[in-house]
Image 1 (cartoon, rainbow, N blue to C red):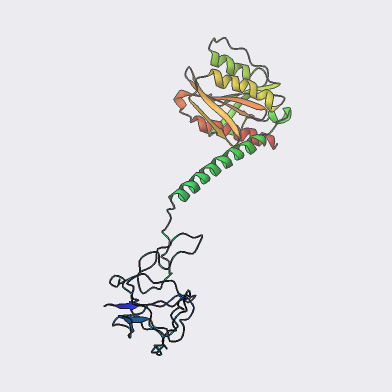
Image 2: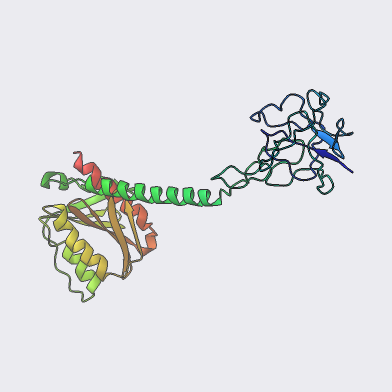
Length: 312
């Protein structure tokens, strides 16, 4: 009959046919086996550990046990005393390693998969690695939302910091002799602009911008390649109404913002033009198509001129 392994009473019950291999160690939390405990038997007789099996720290041959007293009628026989050979185990052939789930899971916990023999009962396998794809996607989305929010806040702050020019400051915008995109302003005049005779809705809307304010100016560069028509309104809200009407009426060739100013560009006959609104000021800047002036550069130059006037 094969050799049988017997776990002490304070240990979890070993699975049928289990023989601990060499190098195996019981869990530190398990109580020490009783003195003289027989770990291995063969056909009910205590034997030394078989070759390649775990060697208990101390092997004490079991003492001969006295005959068990005959139980009185109606009573039960007492348990096998320590030191006596446990009953013969008719379990199947030994297994090289304990099956999963031994020792049993504690009440209230899920069954745990265990490492191969030699690692000790109850030593759990490391948990599977969790995918970080969801975390990476979540972080990416969070960063994108943050960037958009920062951009919106930055534009709102810039728009709210737009200057409100006084009449005196407005009179210095594109004054004679001032440089614009490498050209010099050669002439500047003030006064109410003339009404347009065009029936084009966009031109009428733009002409409304430069005629409905409180102050006006008209300026051209010395080579007559660039011209500017500006209007100052009482406040930002008043300046925004005609600008938004023109933006809606015109077929735009471009739109953008620059340092808090908003602008759109249009094509009028043989002229490229940009309309910019910043604070309480709206300015039309135009360039002949043959000059090939970039409208975003022209918008930037107009915004810079308004900002400089606010500091004068």
